[in-house]
Amino acid sequence: MLNRRNFLTAAVGVAAATGLAACAKDDGGSGGSGGSGGSGGDKKITLGFAQTGSESGWRTANTDSVKAAAPEAGINLKFSDAQGKPENQISAIRSYIAQGVDVIAFSPLVVKGWDAVLKEAKAKKIPVILTDRSIETSDESLYVTLVGSDFTDEGRRAAKILEKVLEKAGHKGKVKIAQLEGTTGAAPAIERAKGFKEVMDAEHKDDWKIVVSQSGDFTRAGGKQVMQAFLQSNPDINVLYAHNDDMGLGAIQAIEAAGKKPGKDILIVTVDGVKDGFAAMAEGKINAIIECNPLLGPQLMDVVKKVKNGEKVERWVKTEESDFMQDQAKAELPNRKY
Ligand code: AHR
Image (cartoon, rainbow, N blue to C red; front, side):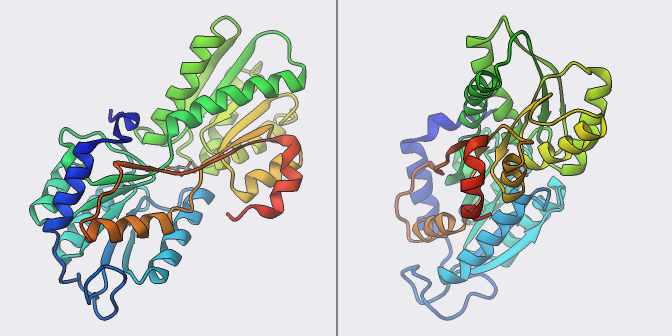
């Protein structure tokens, strides 16, 4: 597994970035015509972007951000939606290579399985930027940089905020946690579980336990279905840690259908911070949210231009995020941008 923390100042990454960019085609991809696009040349940069799908509110906001930022930056965007299937993402990347785009960006559905197609991009001297999610690779020169969040830290922050939630609720006794994991094999699922466990094992070994943990695939329907099963097998669950708001929102429906009160009988911590999550938190149904910012479009376009111009970029361009407790929800809700 690629350790994102190792990349902060990685000289290797910078070398890979500048090397790839220096070799990158500058004749635009298909559709690259007119306007400088800030690329330093006369032609617009053409960016091929392979999105995961539309599994969550976060993803919708991310797609909207990328689609809005490209024309603002003067970049010609080719966009594809893999509908949750890694093989579709691979086909989209192959198609961008065949079209000769200037730069490829994608949000890898899962961490494994990218080396072959990324080697094809490298052979054609097309630089690749990861957005949102990382990959596991044997050859780190296959991509230039990652623009996205620190998911392991989000997991740690989730555990730390749960301490506050438990204290605020006056919780006494064992903490029996149900974990709704994201898509199996995806970086945010792996890393959010890892960060949470790290804090739990270090600081709460005796009183906290994850009693059930299963993937809800980052969807509302998945969260509802898996939570129904959790409640049947473990009716004494008193905490839910959901790897995203959508699964948490689905779980809330299951909890209410089981005659329990979300946010009271079962304390809930989720990740993302989409408007629907904040609305549920304002109603008292979610206790805390760890923000994961999907508005990566402008940052991505900046990086695309730098890479195309052969400028140095950090190996990992991180996003800034906050944590929110329930008592902040009402005031914060009108400010949410996604
Ligand atoms: O990769 C980011 C994750 O993907 C978000 O947290 C989740 O909602 C989305 O589907």
